[in-house]
Image (cartoon, rainbow, N blue to C red; front, side, top):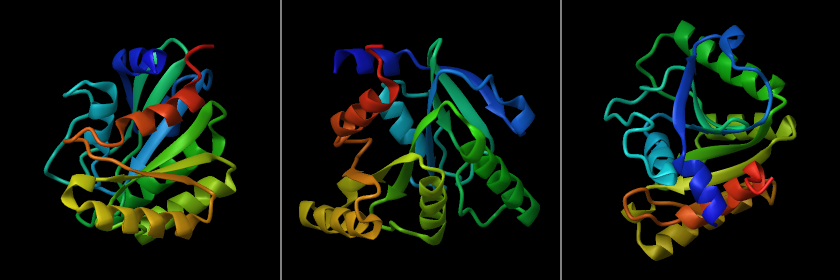
Length: 200
């Protein structure tokens, strides 16, 4: 796993995109990470890249309000998508985010896969399922990460993972993850290895 770890640990903030014309050139390989507000997306990115302050974490849901690009090397990028499902933003802002996310997923040729982050205690919310369905319709590779696994015992973790696997019927890979304990980091690195192909 050395090569993928080196790649991820080299992550640097590149740009925040509010509108599609601001998107960087559509070349190389990108992996996008999406999830409901407060599902643990920023903590996952920071743990995966071993960089505490890379993605800004907040107790206030809805902090990520644009597409945030992190450059891993000249050809590879992690993209943090705006959190969805947060009630305390205007309907216009929600529509803007939705359009930004959908437009990006629909048109981005360099997008190799999508990670959807779900709180293991509350998986498979409507927004999660809608985004997953849309991604699969686009033919995107899809990986589901059930975060905050340390909040549940081992048996309950397995139950939640089985429920989510069954919901997707093999169309997406699924794993548990805990940013605080480091659980599931290697499994997620294997997915990133397959998508980013750092040895190339």
